[in-house]
Length: 388
Image (cartoon, rainbow, N blue to C red; front, side):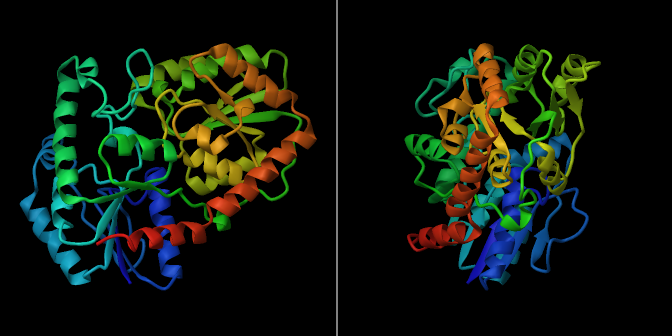
């Protein structure tokens, strides 16, 4: 089978980790796999069948490619895809040139994996200003969120992309059941297919609880990810305990000053900067508990998947796909209630070693059963059989 995967970047975040994982997985199952990316920062190809088309980065070019079909790019894509003659095409994220990509694949059997809530909410967060959850653009009045010129432009671009996507793509998949359900309620023909974990990346075998209990947040450091609420809760929780909250990831520029001021001169907090995924996985061997405090509605966070697979306790916000991945109310909190976050941190700290090891071992077994590369492959292959 000739299988083409299309994704915006080669290396950036969780989607790119899953894209590379899928390439490797389908090659291992004996298929002819191809990859197209649009990454302006690429240094070298991932493998021989990798085509990268570097997209311009000027604001005007970016806006134009998000608004209309790029005829030159369309011709190039049609030529590449026509030479490959794929049996199936899998699209992940194509933010820079959606109309062009959708039109280029229109004559093929294709599905797109919905990786975040931008497919049902032009803000991508799927929350209102009061932080309550939104039901999606078809079920809510988006005018509540379109005050100001910038939001009006975002909504206009969203509407154009949605029209193009629904015109050319018939099949969709999504890692979390929560977003699958929300997409279905907003007009998508969609199936839930959980992300896989590559157990070659499992670096934590025998977990040992250390004297200092390290709590970890990793990912984009921003207000919408609940980071500032977590800092507030951790300040209440730490008291005289031998604990530390470590942050790894890129800081959202708009939140940089606030973040730096909140953790400055406080030994309970440490920022390690942005690190590669393999480095983060290695660091998990030192981590007692990963915290996922998102305010915005998450899909199927790699942070939860990777931590569980590496025998690290995980607690998180009871929003979106997080709660179906943790599915234990004792480890879920209401991020809008700081005291609830503090209580859940306290619960993990007071947990007996037997309870801790029981939970993390159970988590590993669950990931091996539900999120193996084989299970993901079989689910995709089963879905492909339904495509006309």
